[in-house]
Every structure is written in C-alpha cells, then in structure tokens.
Image (cartoon, rainbow, N blue to C red; front, side, top):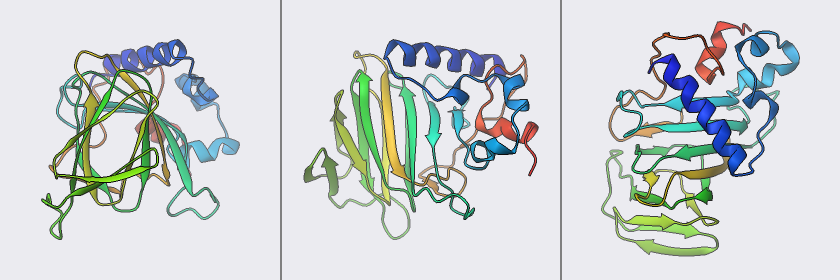
Length: 228
C-alpha cells in the first residue's frame, strides 16, 4: 500500500468517527512527530500495539479486501507487567470490502455494530486439519444462542452484536446498499502476530511504499522510533 493512501484512509476514519459521535483516545490523533517525542511512560502503546492498523491483506486491492482498525486497549500474551485480560478495537468496513476467513486460537470476541449499515458475517467451524467443517455453527447474538448450517451468512444490524468463538472461521463485510459500518470489538487479549489462522495465506500487515511523509503512524511503524 502507498503511504499516501494510508494517510487518506486514516484521515477519513477520523472524520467518520467524529460524524458517528465516537470519541477516540488521544493517541489516535498523534502525528509522527508527536509519537517520536513519547517516552517510557507510553511504553504500553508500543508493547501492546495500540493505535491504527490498516491492511489490504497483501492483495493490493484495499477497497475489495481490506480493513481499518484502531486498537484502543489491550493486554499482552508475554509481558507480565500488563495485567489486562481484555482488548477493545474500533473497526470500519466498507460495502462489500471483504475481511478474509480466519479464526483465533486464543482470542474470543464480540463484534458490535456501532452504526452505519448492516454487517454480514459468514461462518464455518474449523475441523481437525484447520479446514472448513460442515458441522452446524453456534451463533450467539445478544443473548440468543442457536445453530445455523455451515457457511450461513448472518446479518448484524446497528446495535446488534455477534460472538465469534475460538476456532470458528469468519469472514465479514458491510452489506451492499446500506453504507459503511462502524464496528466495536470487545475481546480477550489480542495478538495479531501469533493468534490468527487465515484459511488462505494472506499478508496480515501491509507492505508500504513510502511515497509521502507519515501523517498518523500505524502499529508496524512503531519500530521506527521506539526501542526497548
């Protein structure tokens, strides 16, 4: 992805969050120079990958296959100084913008439609070879638990939420004709380096073409200015 495109995506997300009256933490607004000035008291941001995370999953077609995320709070699998057992993210997905099939080994999450259009979630259980199972899938939505056939598409309307259990493959996108969707993710600790199992190989973090200065860093930029 080009840096200029990343800059534009995050700038647009900031405007959308403001339009939706969703207030973001201070670090969501920091530019590169402000991040460079932060000292050891902000170590949690860097250690736990709090901040912007934009990916095209290595496909090079962000509008068709991509996702914007902001990690607002998070614990850590390996660093004992962080006692948080939970995480929270903001996600924005566009109409028919696919997040590829994946599941988590450790993380269990609720995806909440905070507003905008409808979210479509397609689900399969994983089998013993980490492929798709044809077994019925447990769907937990706002206190209702039921089973649906493998590969069912579940509509999550504004205000509704869906629980994504460990080992359950899921792909999602904003339903065509209803507009982009602002999502909340409430989960156990998130680690996008080791805890994602994609059905097909993808690039979880983007390769960046530096065609413009960095406006708002994404989490993979932190290594440029943060040293242990």
